[in-house]
Image 1 (spheres, rainbow, N blue to C red):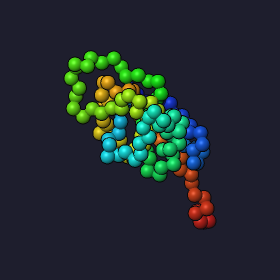
Image 2 (spheres, one colour):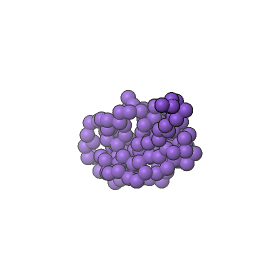
Image 3 (tube, one colour):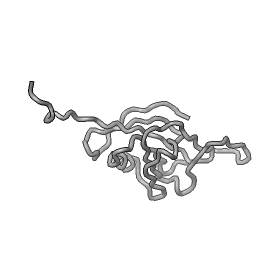
Image 4 (cartoon, rainbow, N blue to C red):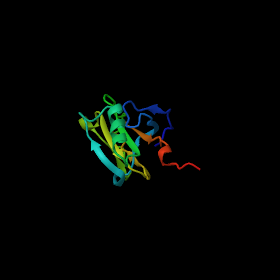
Length: 136
């Protein structure tokens, strides 16, 4: 489920100093075939550390973060759960961080009992290589 996009947030300590990220929504992850690295909780990574790990990984385009202290929504344990849902539960959800390469589709929807997360898209600024331009 994509709940909309957020505002751009700069990444402090980014490799270029001009990377940022924007929320793609919550309640889903990128497909497991796109996963590059997984930092499970409870030690995991803070949101800032998760974004910095993505910057360090050349192929990283998206990252998912499960914030510490977030709790799953109330759910009827007897209610059916659709096929194709995934989730991170228990202590593994505290500060969990996953890095993904493109594509981030099809999305894997989180289980109704899973801890809430947010998926972010990394924006890498491309600096122009003026030293490679020849004089006319």
